[in-house]
Image (cartoon, rainbow, N blue to C red; front, side, top):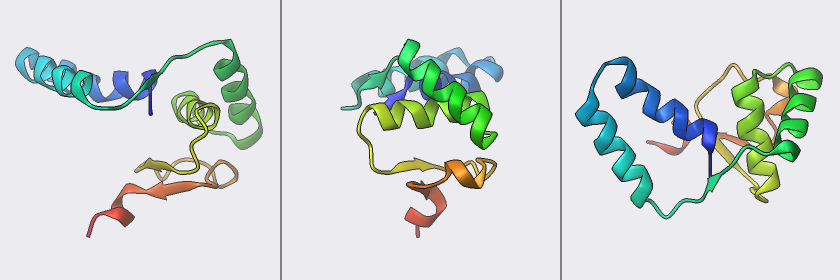
Length: 99
């Protein structure tokens, strides 16, 4: 599962670099992955708002977390150490998975 915000964040890199070919190649790879894109709906927005307010998470991080919880995920793999400690339960650092 990938939140729609994650999709946006991934594609923003090649867009910032004005790399149209890299953008399209990355978008093609993401479209072909066996991953469900989790949309942002009112329920996710409410859960994310609570996480922002209670844990101090940024809006994108709170959306990632809310999408993962709503999808039934037991682990969220990320590499953003800025996520506040109260919101970090169930988060696995990407660096910890790569040897």
